[in-house]
Length: 340
Image 1 (cartoon, rainbow, N blue to C red):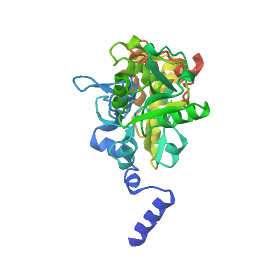
Image 2: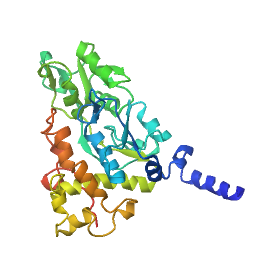
Image 3: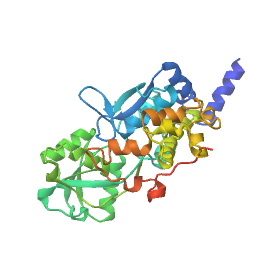
Image 4: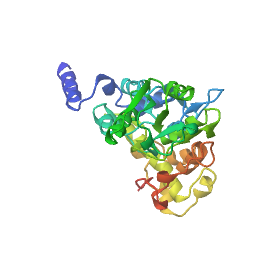
């Protein structure tokens, strides 16, 4: 027995798993046994994850977790949302406090390797920008030389800000805050000349500033910010569930399957739709779920386009054009591997 235990420990060390990660290599079983998904989200970012006055969460990141719950439990309400700051988010996932991090987080090499995380896809293609008060009369970020900029610390935003000013040989004064709400409040009170975050976040935060038209989002996009959910390394089965939930939502939109017509589509003769909805093949079995896993997602949460529209797109207060987040077949970057 001691020899077997030593072998297990050595194997864990060989693949670089921490004790916490080793204990969580059966996340799907843990989630099923617990009866609820633990999802790490933003503390409050409109369009992505924000609670209303009744504590109900909405947003594209929140709905992604509901889609996982629908696939696993056939019930999108079986999610416990854990609000996390940028500083807290990775530790919460590494320690097992949450099962998945769905918190407008940028996929980078260091995060995908040395932090012990695996990103499962890009649910929102974004890029960093700047917001300033209209009264300053600025038309371009190139006019920010010498400006003070409010920024949240512990983020790629802070690093990109430094790179942008260094590259353009400009001076600036960073005014850093641990919490994003503090950075926005400081900007709004006049402590900074500008505020920087992902462009989607700028649209979201501008809605909270009283007179949104008093603030201008400058045209420059200074970085690549592929935002997506992450899971712990060392659990391929759970990573597959997380990845294929996202792919199912994209494939459904591409095939024209929506929450409104999915029951009708159960009778489709299209082989791609039959595989998606579990009428042909055993694709759910391959990820440890029932055959109707994708049907449950589409029926109870919607396809990617439906979620985008109601959370950040034309059906929302943000009204952000899909841009890069259009399907590949319509000139965007959203592209899912096929179910076959």
